[in-house]
Image (cartoon, rainbow, N blue to C red; front, side, top):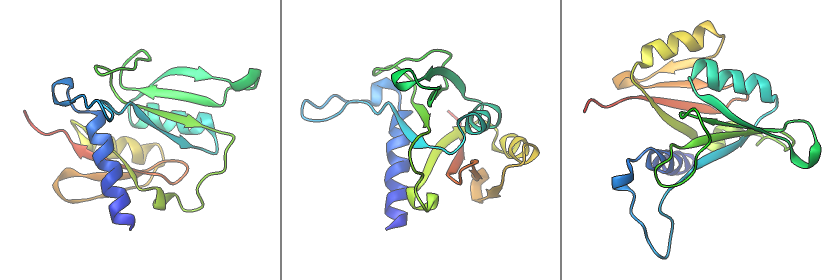
Length: 155
């Protein structure tokens, strides 16, 4: 079951990165996947991981009902965008219980032009990673979520 969830999450996230020309509108369904939200225990610690290790940009901080900031939207773009031509984003959110076994969540899959440099950056920042075949690495974020980093395919 875990392999199926991992495969499905990877497929959805890879679809997020698909060029607009590959996105097809289906009148009865969706045309684009915008992003994923994960619950974290420490918002700032997680934001540092996703910005400093993975190179994402914090594009919006949100507070619900006048409370302290409890949500950060991260993107590969410098601005918050949504729609068929936008890049996918990850939302970090506090205030909810984390899944007891983060590995059962599956993996978030991303691409990088230099997975070896990203592995070095993760290790220097104190985060665990495992090396796999074909330049693929899996980095574990501060809350135990696995981020699968695939090498960018040559064009």
